[in-house]
Amino acid sequence: MSKILVIAEHLGGKLNSSTARAVSAAIAVKGEAIDVLVLADSADAIAAEAAKIDGVSRVLTVARAENAHPLAAVLAPQIAKAAAGYSHVFVPSTTFGKDVAPRVAALLGVAQVSDVMSVEAAHTFKRPIYAGNAIITVEADATHTVVATIRSASWPAATTGVNSAPVEALTVDAALPTHTRFVELKQGSSDRPDLQSASKVVSGGRGVGSKENFDIIFKFADKIGAGVGASRAAVDAGYVPSDLQVGQTGKIIAPELYMAIGISGAIQHLTGIKDAGTIVAINKDGEAPIFEVADFGLVGDLFKIIPELEAALN
Amino acid sequence: MKILVGYKRVVDYNVRIQVKPDGSGVVTDGVKLSANPFDDIALEEALRLREKGVAEEVIVVGIGPADLTAHLRNGLAMGANRAIHVVTGDAVQPLTAARVFLKLIEKEQPGLVILGKQAIDDDANQTGQMLAALWDRPQATFASKVEIADGKATVTREVDAGLEVIEAELPAVITTDLRLNEPRFIKLPDIMKAKSKPIDTIELGSLGVEANDQLKTTHYAAPAKRSKGVMVKDAAELVAALRQKGLL
Image 1: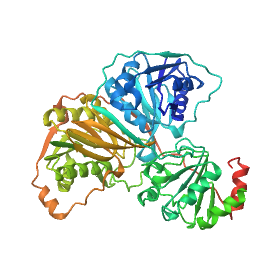
Image 2 (image 1 turned 90 degrees about the vertical axis):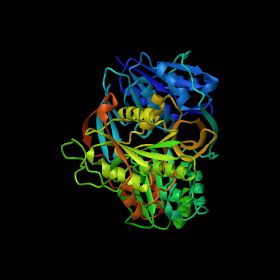
Image 3 (image 1 turned 135 degrees about the horizontal axis):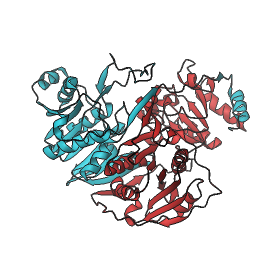
Image 4 (image 1 turned 45 degrees about the vertical axis):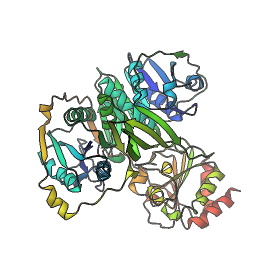
């Protein structure tokens, strides 16, 4: 029977929702146990959050000063040791997981399945290639540990509430390197919902026209309590920083509501939003490809339409 | 210092990928092949480091069939000093590619290895991290800025939460993100010059690398399509429609 180890992603003492999504994928394996591993400098609060996720059997913590920041070179040897006895190691397919998981796989001498979209059987998975333009079914060797990253946009977060899994401190005997050091994290400080996990996202594109004009997007997003994203064109034009980019080379997201404003809908952008619940497109060009995938389309000048939307909401 | 650069050939990013009707693969016959865009960025960064005097030699590495030579010549025309062609008729998975690179590292002793963060065909995003693990050296993935000084690399990384800065002692592995640089265009005189640059050819089998391709791809399918929805006439109708779905 399968035993799955899910690696928790966290920042600033809070569990990232990508962890509960990875637990959903672990549940789909239908194994006998799902343990969540929390590597942190101070793990208690994060572990308490993880213990509430339904389906989790145990939460294991490794609290060490070296784990204060998510450095792959430091975390991977600990995860590889902790993986002993597990058939699967699942890590969210975020920049955190993409960084650390292959390092774990190589230490274990096993292949990695990247961006798991569905679990067909304990060792059979579906994943996208060619920027989502083809979906492949892959079979992993059942005699080896499966290391996989879980594509967050394909999985709902596992529910929380009724579960209260036991939390156990784990001691892992792994030599940790000092050749890699964290310097700083520059975060766009914001009270807005995080783009990756927001249930509503409003994105602006080149049609917004300038950095100053982008305020209209931020203001509207705040009005409806949405996260803010942008197309690659808007990022390349310098309207907003790159961490807001949605698409193949940016963030792949699956909010319940996605509003694309002044975005034409290049393939690379559509790749990032195709799992969204409802897509709304507002663009002055009625022929824009974004309308081909939009559930609701509205042709017109965004600078006229957004104030009208705000008025209609009041 | 030597810099080793991974230089993979992939289906050009402008090609519309078609899945074969029998699900056995994607159509690659007759489609345009190009350097993986992230590898062009890796090569550009290596060339800039050489131009700054940080490195003396830039070596491009390709793993693939005999006709990969023309692709490697492009890397030489862009400015690499020489190329290594690891010859194999089989597609290699990331762990095998990492093991090949490790063998080349043992021979070449580079101070830096720069790879693309992912290849745009299999989108695996694994080889650099796996190589760093096997080599037991630092990794700085998704780099958008690289500074080399005092035996270490200070690398700005594009992470979900923003920009992370880390320090990595050399030798190290760096993988490139889109915004690290804009690769230069190849000029005609450089293509002529590249013809006389050396390409070492090594059979994959002679490296003593265990091909360990544990993943079997059993089926290819086209992605599910979203269907076109409805056009609304104005803002009020849009708000009403979204309210009805409970989204606002």
